[in-house]
Length: 53
Image 1 (cartoon, rainbow, N blue to C red):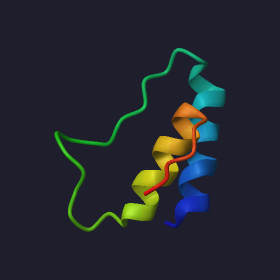
Image 2 (tube, one colour):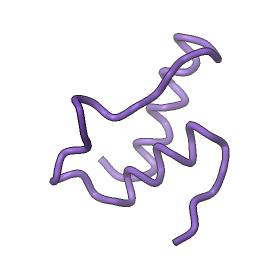
Image 3 (cartoon, helix red, strand yellow):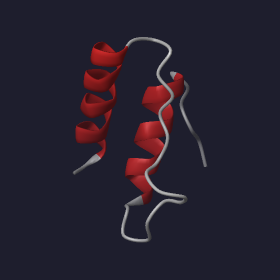
């Protein structure tokens, strides 16, 4: 998916499970084929903060 897909999925899951949901990447780490933009999108959508590099 792309960053917009990630944001929609975070919102969808939060809508189902509520505000106390802990969102994190799968497994023990982020897999090497995950685009950095998707990681940023998940972090931004989860925290409500914008990441700047």
